[in-house]
Image (cartoon, rainbow, N blue to C red; front, side, top):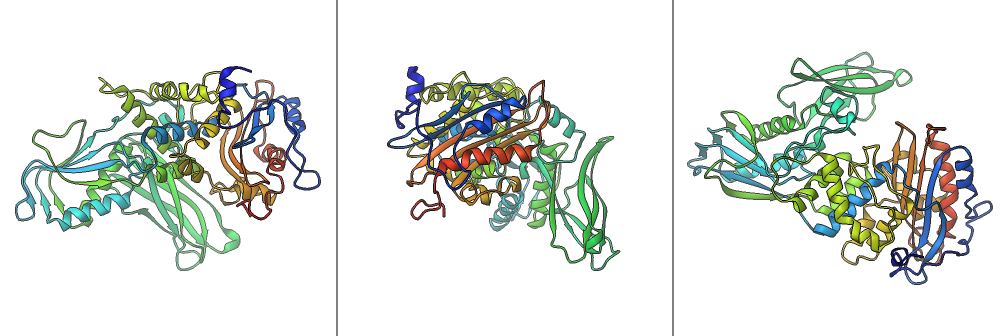
Length: 503
């Protein structure tokens, strides 16, 4: 056993051979037979399960050092690095600045907004900022709005999904990072039924129509038996962006929210800022421009703070938010990189994050080196093994300051906002705190990692990666997930017994 592998349990005690945990019930016995069956089908598998804390040990291992595509499990590395660098109470700042004095509610110069790269800036924050400026007496601005990308700016596109979203998108997952973006780089649309069958549905932008984006409503109101799935598409054509919503919603159905990646997220943010000030009763004359630095003579008027980093990490992991993950990746790279002549690409920023994590991961047994080219996991070139992921989980569990925020960011499987995780045995739903990762191209990917409550009230950590291979590139997620649940659930033992905290 190498020194680095022993180091994973300076806090945990490792034994390479350990008896399996107790069974939960008939047929639920820990066994690597499930994993061997997957490999027999031509799939690649890496897995490790450990008990943490006093008496900790490896419960099972199956090709733990095999590097595979981790998909969204990559976000665990981002979460660990961000929490270790800044701590869960860290907040990003938005400085509201002016270049001329405020006289009788009037600014003769521009109103300047300096964004430090907050991944969680949403329209609610923007509206509150505008209303605070109004409460401080501002009623009119002559010099327009200046938005300052004080973070990493607008990086070049390097992922195919995001490059396509600059022209057309039907999803929110490929929203492009930019340090000026609001609402995670996505357009938010509300859909509600009309008053009667046959009436047009109500479709509207939230919080208000952003200037320059056209909304096309092709949703009808129908009887419940005739409803059709709703679909949203953003398209940029001849310099004009439109959002088209189609489908049929049932009479009396509750309102629904749809999201789609914006073609130009910084332009969307500019439109939302202008709209926020208008709704606060502040007249802004002149253009809205984006710069890398504040104009000469700009001084801070007041400062707004973001939600805590712990809250952002919770949103990122629970909802697998790609925008937050890659935005944090750029923010972390800027911290270690200092001033640069240009914004780094996402692979460059991700490799900087990996270099910063490598010594810490090595102490907890990660090998071979993790490869990240996107913190979100959207890059198919990312590679990590089950042992790498266990190193993150074990290292964070030993961190007295940051572990509570890290653990809290992983919802119990039964309460996950990702519906495919919520089924299964009660022990799985209540005792396992899970981050998942999936991809379908160029091969299918399913990964699960997180913590579980043991029968004795202690904590365990697990990581399982399943990838398609050239011989068997695709597989259905549902049966493979069911197999992994059968494999993992027994390690929690009789996890619903009193005192374990997962009843």
